[in-house]
Image 1 (cartoon, rainbow, N blue to C red):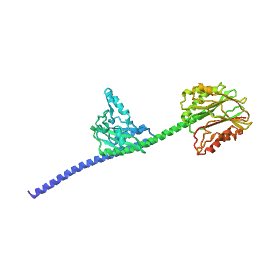
Image 2: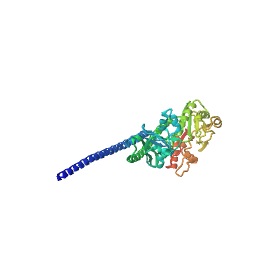
Image 3: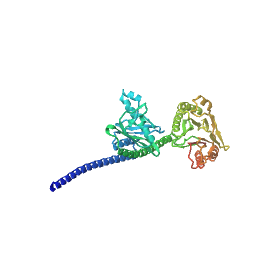
Image 4: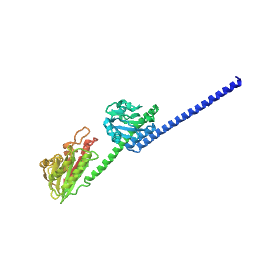
Length: 479
């Protein structure tokens, strides 16, 4: 072979190698570029998912919206066919479906009886998958929650959790699942899936899914805290509104009764009070004066208090016997009072023209009566049964009227048990004796002074200790 031919062959071979390498390089470059584009696209989807989720939490979104954004976002990031979010109930024994995408492949087993019914109506199967709760230790969802870490399952139907003869799973599905935990608590399970014909998830998909699931746990936990805080604020606002309504139900001013000075006050232990007092103009210079204490505190006691006030005002007009009035109140309220609740009451009808008064107690604490002539205090202990304990017959047999003649300078103090049962930091009780001593210091100074002096004495005794019960006082001073 001539040297020229040899050189030509070498040059031709070199050219072919160069061309082949160029083609391979271009192919490799295109592949790298495609992979780069895929990674950038995935990062963008991840960024948008986290950004939208953060905005949803900051804008006080509902829990439903946050759940939807988590599932839809994760499905989009890992290119799944669909996904689902199950949350645990209060006891952590049950997983409840909160959001399942329309195209989510089946993730739960189906009882045989559901399959039989679904042969006649396919909606039965769809409804079961969308609505059926799952035991937190059963199925593939329960398995994920039990192991406490993310799992990837290439073929769901072969998973060990579906070996129960009464549960079937026939779909060809791949899935990735992750437990959602925040602040040491199980919140639920996040799952994505796709049918085999769409391909199986890769290790890279699983790595991305785990990262997104961790962020979802944090977001879901913070969303729950955020939503609970908003609900608490809303409830507190509603309770304050209820307190303002309840405040309107109490007397806005003290009554102007010929020959008397009368003052009352109500100090709730919580936002809503179960105590109340009232002054009812009965006409002809006669007044009804009532003080009451509903067992318990809070909203339930406040509602019952409002009912009691309304009923008493509706039956008081035209009546001359306090016992009869309380009997009518008892008969009307008894059917609607829970077995664990009752109302102690004292009702006094005062005649401003002559100093005559009639009083009845429905299981209420005895009132104090200061006698100006002797400087002594006696207790008004007329017999009576609390409202709501008996339907009527026993109540009316036990409860009796007590007639009084109030002399000038005398003072009667009605009170609820929140006064005598008030505790200091050492858990000592204020008690009847301290209350009586405080009362004796001020009856000659007027009804308002009596209330102020007792409240001051009570505050000095309790100090910084929390008020445990509602406190209500009414002072009736004869001029």
